[in-house]
Image (cartoon, rainbow, N blue to C red; front, side, top):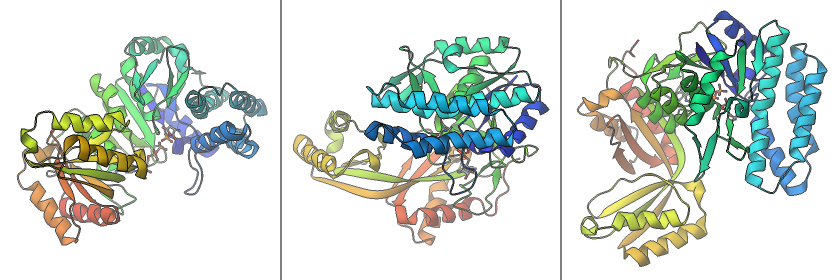
Length: 455
Ligand SMILES: Nc1ncnc2c1ncn2[C@@H]1O[C@H](COP(=O)(O)OP(=O)(O)O)[C@@H](O)[C@H]1O
Ligand SMILES: N[C@@H](CC(=O)OP(=O)(O)O)C(=O)O
């Protein structure tokens, strides 16, 4: 059997849902269907999840948000109308949404999660109703009933191990299971959502739990490209990637697949196939354990911005036992997580996401590092982009760093920092935000313009 996930772009309109139905019907192995909330129909459209977040915020502030409520319900209403579904479905969605919005606000975080999750929950009900109306034996399954339990530790959601055994029972369901993505339940019975784009994670968890032979992830592109198609026009398609390569690339900015969605499938040895709802006959991209390295050292180049670095220098830092621990402790006490720590003999840089703190907290942290660690120099550099070049082939290949540095120099991009991942399948370059696009294009030219990609 296969677990098949459809993203928001595949479920944005009635026309898209018709394609989804055709895809499900075309393969009897597609037994578990995971759905996102309706996404964008066109470039300037607003995703239902974004409308829900705005709506919940307005309710938290003023107790009402009639325009947003209507905008959300009408997204489902227009899909239902396009598919000739009875109006009662949309009315039910309106009633459920309004009840939820009027509900318990004592924990704004739990309230927000419940409102966000309703995007996928209502869509799963709508999709199941549509499948049934077309004569398919399909059933909506709620994550709590299926036993998808999670814990919420230090701001990130962890799947509880017993969930996998619970989900195995979905195999006994004779009908096609339509399952909402993006959320689970904690042991207190409250809804907890994954991070944004987290329906990919649900699909991977279900693939693991049901011991599926394949996890299919349907989106709106023919393949994972070697570089973000919004940065380089018509980039090369990648046919095969390893889990590790995809995890690094997703983490570093390939928004096509969530980085946390790799591990559940990887642990159960289930390949992932990323495919296009708008062109289902295209073979897409497979994520597997091993692949042939026929395309040179680099398989993909990803980038993301909005980082800053805290540079700390102190003579003989390398001899001072506990220096790193005390430095990180200052961040920990201020609730900050970090991404990378490149270091030298007398200096260390900590790369963090900039949106975690404002000027006041930054000043406080810098003073503490001077006072408590007697640092010689502390400098915060803002507006950095991180560019990651990734490929299993980099482990055996000599000279990749030199080629990358030369390409960046040729494009007149100043490298602010370099960090080679310990896994040796990735290398990171820090550049100024303004140079991000230029740097990615220069690296693409260097590593891909003349190289055939593995097929
Ligand atoms: N390297 C890449 N390969 C393919 N798509 C990418 C890449 N990097 C970013 N993307 C973007 O990811 C989008 C698909 O992800 P997303 O919008 O989350 O889809 P969905 O609605 O199916 O969840 C593509 O339309 C593309 O713009
Ligand atoms: N709807 C949620 C979860 C998700 O996975 O959506 P999408 O499949 O559209 O990326 C979000 O927007 O974050």
